[in-house]
Image 1 (spheres, one colour):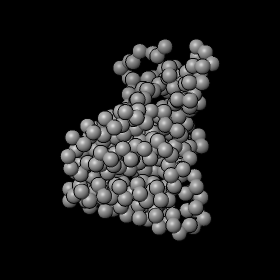
Image 2: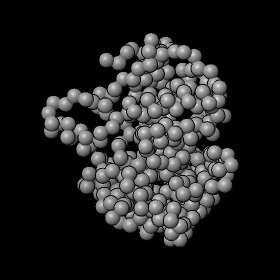
Image 3: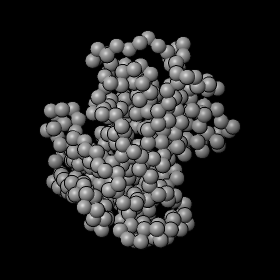
Image 4: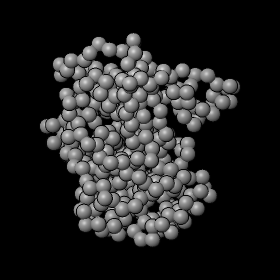
Length: 350
């Protein structure tokens, strides 16, 4: 049973994210625009206690099942791993970061627990949200937030995931630290010199109405990057050119947002997906993901992946409300969920 929250309990919430433009070039020293998705979040609670403890989530970390059938159903829908390993990795990397930088930590115990409503395997960054929320709790509980600059925190979150063999880039962690809408430049020379990219918060009000479409229990999106990454490392000119073009669409997208030119922004979103499809191929992208894009376009929307698959972001350059209802009807008939995007506000830390 989870302990009752006391007056010193720290609770932190971190939101899912949407890659609006530029992804997946972020994994290839490119540029992206991402936004914080307030519709879905992970929440971590840190309560002072006599020892360091981790409370399993009743669903995501369940070790008791009514039958083999229920066990298999849970594994097929949720996978083998819950969030406890993410909490433990966050604690380890937080401690090591503070040790390396001589940041003193009080000897205090605590109990970590978590909850999340971020749909699994939808490319909405559910794992990194748990890690980021845990690190926020640890910083606040130990009173060291001012000693860990915001610009360093995305890499700290990523390092905890890398502890567990999770392959990812900085984009998701940047937007989950900064919130709001952020333009990111992962130029290789700058990254090598500074250990992080250039991150520029944008005015949230510049973003037009967007809709999220996602599939319940989609196939695992973790294989999407595999072949393209190998080809990029091998110097494949098609992949180099394709990723450069995707990155430049983020640059253009920032200009289009500032100009409120949403017709051209829609074209940029569609072109981003078309480039991705050309580089990755239909077999890698998967029939579920392709069908969501097809439905969005048939309703008059521009559409692209939010991340690595499982969800898409849709924009209607005109007639949004009427066309979004058409999109809902089309998607509902095939088991997809449609929700209007609610952008989380920027973090108010400096």
